[in-house]
Length: 206
Image (cartoon, rainbow, N blue to C red; front, side, top):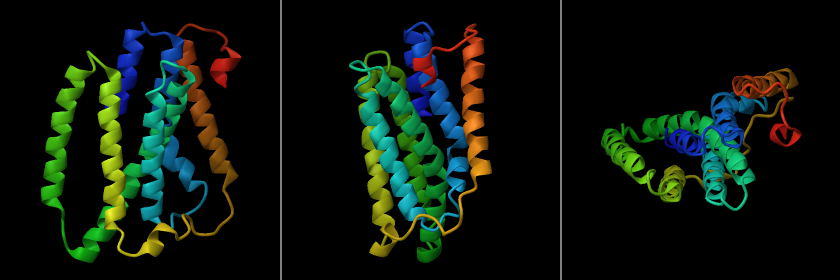
């Protein structure tokens, strides 16, 4: 929810310019098809490692967005990394939590309640802080992403869980891969048409 509002805020502040529509489309597209993209590579063998990878991807994307004023391309790259990372992180985190809960017998209800309260506080901060500084909001989101990464790592008691292969061996399903790619381009062109442009600039397509 937080990245979504960051992109929407940037879009509104820049009067709906295509340069700021594209990052939103990229983020939303990969947020929806990212987990499907991962399935192209096979059945997940190590959810701990994949959740860690997704967290690192979100962190990298957040860092890149902090430099968007120096280079607008950073906003597009950050949108891709955060969208893709979150799409994978959410289901993998639930898988990891289920594994740990089964092992320990702990339901983590207190932790979930604390997380919900933290989300409410940060959401209120987002509405207030975004009026003054997007960088401040992103910095706090970056801190939360780092906390999530260390939380994942703290769940791992067996070091081999962080080095075991991500996927079970199988051939790539390129038919699925093409479906994912087509879905992404369709989302972009729908956005492009809504902006009343008959053709797209090569740089924007790239």
